[in-house]
Amino acid sequence: MIAVIKPSATAEQKAGLVDWIRSQGVGVHVSEGHDYTVLGLIGDTSRIDMELIASLDIVDSVKRVAEPFKQCSRKFHPDDTVVDVGGVKIGGGHFAMIAGPCSVESREQIIAVAQAVKDAGAKLLRGGAFKPRTSPYSFQGLKDEGIELLLEAKKATGLPIVTEIMNANDLPLFEEVDVIQVGARNMQNFDLLKELGRTGKAILLKRGLANTLQELLLSAENIMIGGNARIILCERGIRTFETHTRNTLDLSAVPALHEMTHLPVVVDPSHATGQARLVEPMALAAAACGADGLMIEVHNDPIHALCDGAQSLTCAQFAGTARKVRAIRGALQ
Ligand code: PEP
Ligand code: MN
Image 1 (cartoon, rainbow, N blue to C red):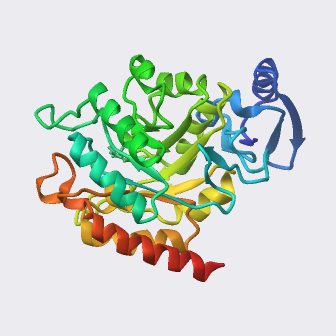
Image 2 (cartoon, helix red, strand yellow):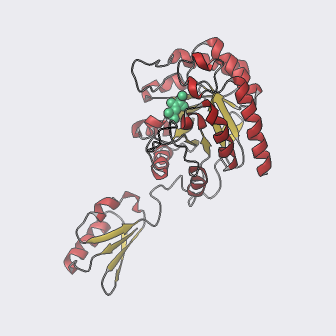
Image 3 (cartoon, rainbow, N blue to C red):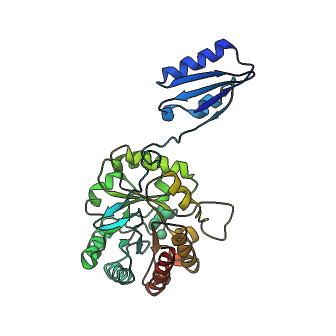
C-alpha cells in the first residue's frame, strides 16, 4: 500500500501517521520528495483500513499494490484449484454442468429431472430446498423434506447434489449434501461463510446482486480462513440500470476472476437472464470465455413450476444446450 502525503503536512503530523501505521504491525518506508512525501507500507497490510487513511486531512491519495485477499489470490497459489465432488472435478481444465429445478417440488419431479439431466450430460444435480424468496407469500421450499428428496434422486441417479443453505443452524441437515450453495443474497453473510469454512464441504459461492469481484473474493476468503478451500465461484448476473433481463450477466468476470484467483468459476445463465430463450446463448458464451462449468435451471414442466418457471429450460431444451456447450468446449481445445 502506498500513501501520498500532501505538501501542507507538518513533520509532526507525518511522524504521527508513521507511528500509528507501525503500531498496526506494518513497516513504513518514508520517501521525502520535493513536494510530496510517499509512505510505502510493508508487510501484511490487509488489516489496514485504506479508507481511514485516505480520509485524513494530510493524505492526498492511497493505493493498494497487493490485493486484500490472500489465500484465494493467484499470486499466493499460481496453480488452478480443482474441486473434486465425489469424483466430479471442476476447475483446472475440468468442466461440469450442474442442472436441475429451481426448487424441489415433489419426488416425481426431482427424480424425473435428475434422470433427464444426467442423460443429457449434467454431472451434478441442483435443487433448492430452502428458498430465499423476496416475497414471504411465495413458495418457500420443502426445506428438510426437499433435502430428503434430493438424496433420493442422488441415490437413483448417482449424481452428487447441490443445494442452498440460508442459515448455519440448518447445517446438520446438509450432512449428506455434496455441494452447499451460498446464494447471492447471502454472499456477505460473514458468520455463515465462516461457519462453512469450518466444514469440509464443497461450497458454491454465488456473486451478490450488487457486489464487486473483489468483494466476492473477500467472501471466499472468509470461508478459506477456516481451512476450507473447496470453493467454486459462481457469476449469476448483477443489478444494473438494464431491466429487460432479470440481471446483467457479467461474463468478463470469468476471465477477470481467472486472473485474480485460482478458484474455479461457473456461470449461471438462468438467474442472470430470467428468460429461458436467453439461457442457451449465454451458456454458450460462458463456455467460450473459459467458464469451468454452468449451473442451469431445468424443469420437467416449466409452466407449472413453483419457482422460476420463466427461466427454466425443459429437459429436451437442456439436452440441446448441453450438446452445443460440448461443441464449443471441443472447438476451444
Ligand atoms: C438459486 O440458485 O436458486 C438462487 C436463488 O440463485 P441466486 O442466489 O443466484 O439468486
Ligand atoms: Mn431459481
